[in-house]
Length: 193
Image 1 (tube, rainbow, N blue to C red):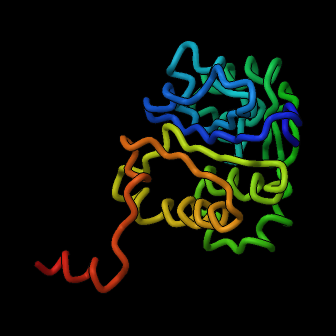
Image 2 (cartoon, rainbow, N blue to C red):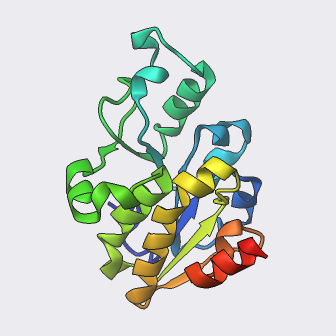
């Protein structure tokens, strides 16, 4: 699954601008990325080793005639020539990649925590955590209200699972993910004040 089995670190990249602070020059770190907005960064393809596309492919595959973003399709097609693409079928016919073990991850980690592509990526890495010493998250902020409500819990869950295995977890201070909310009673009191 890892592009280079010697790598002992996995970095997860979202498409917030802080992804550019990821350790792209660290030969021991394999960078996993996702997010159609990444294509807006001209050199983004240089920043990752593995790309995840878990959304419904017919939204962008010209074969279906319902292309939301043709440039994303072209960008993915180009990326798949040199990068590993992990996907959920059906895949665009012009792309080459690996199928994510969807059912296995879902049965092990329950749908409650698989609430974003980042969470699915982390679940897959967690299943191989014996090969990992350290993880990091860059460009992952979940800064909009809907992301905070609907997509942050899974990522926080997997961060804790990695930490419980003794795996170091790096999150830049500039990321909202670096700041954990207070537990319930304290949180409720602060909101009421």
